[in-house]
Image (cartoon, rainbow, N blue to C red):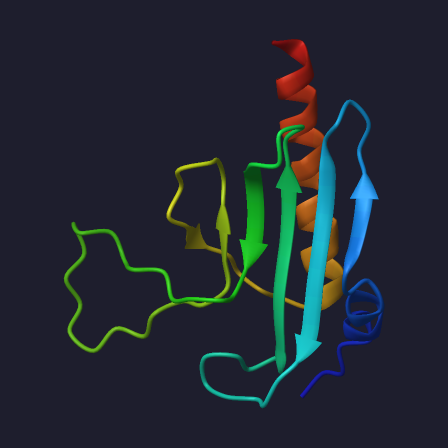
Length: 121
């Protein structure tokens, strides 16, 4: 099994709020948990981008399972816990967790994209 050196970086960011200018802000939560089939990397996390009035507009987390789309009916399908919410009302889509460093890269890349779109409106 490969060692994920990025987990220490992610855990160091726990409880951080990072200003993104224009009233937007990022909140990071991450803590160790027991390794299970649902959480094989042994961390719970929530990385969120908020608009100036506090509403979450983007989020990556593993706090709950994501239900598969209704068009797929697989008996005994394992539910995905790592997922992302792409907008305010998004219930979540699976996120392919590779390691903590890639999680941070993917999240902040998407933060940049969302903020660019929001500032063009």
